[in-house]
Length: 300
Ligand code: GRG
Image (cartoon, rainbow, N blue to C red; front, side, top):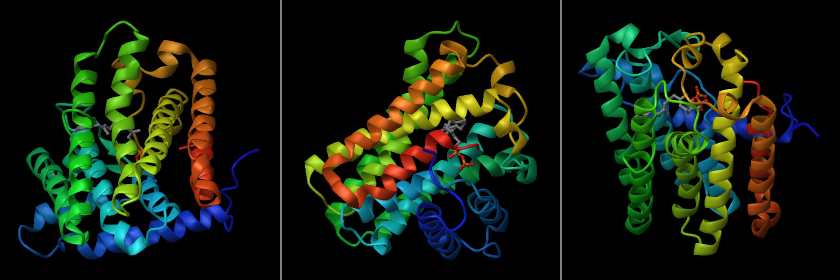
């Protein structure tokens, strides 16, 4: 049965409430546009406050809530993940990386502010993420656990490492092992970390962390497979990415290596396994189960 994401459905209204909380928090905490250095602050705000699905922060907020935490304490952590995500998109769009002109239907950061300022806006958002956690999580042991995990999954052992391998694999022959390695590092790592952070900021037990890690890994990989499929089908292009970049650059993608039908089936299996992983959390994980379905049913 399709996940009900119609206006007013339980999942959609829960997600909308949390998106609004997150966006208000980001708006209040990001440096104001009229504070010097103005162009840098404008460039930071331009990319963070330009929509997007907010999947990573929603995961942090929903996990924290499912394990008994309060939204207020997980909000700075959720916002930090969105800032890291925004930095990665700004840098990924640069001419030295994917060289994209459009993102979320608008000009990419470097097209508006220039390459140097886009690099700096990305740098500043990454460091701002760590500041948000250090300042916003009152218990120093929880703050340090979140920061360590965040740094590990976002850096050379995670997202940045995946981007490096991806760049070096451009034009390579389709190789399932290499493809999975890139996806696991580049996309799955930060999504997994976003979910884990919801546990770490609340301070739940190791068993809960293990279940949520498994959920995050499966949702993260399913998310990337769906991104590849939507890209291949042209859906994301209509929403603002430069048309066909992945195809023309012959990047390794799931449909290219495994075909569309098998890719879709794998995403479905991963969503099912993600939901099974949360079984020990019982009914408090209800929205996270719906989110796993949403990830594989999404159209953008
Ligand atoms: C440059 C350090 C560095 C890392 C780049 C995230 C990333 C690594 C590159 C972005 C390009 C890309 C297609 C990555 C795969 C992950 C992904 C699907 C990103 C888009 O995330 P969404 O769909 O974007 O959550 P929105 O716009 O909804 O926020």
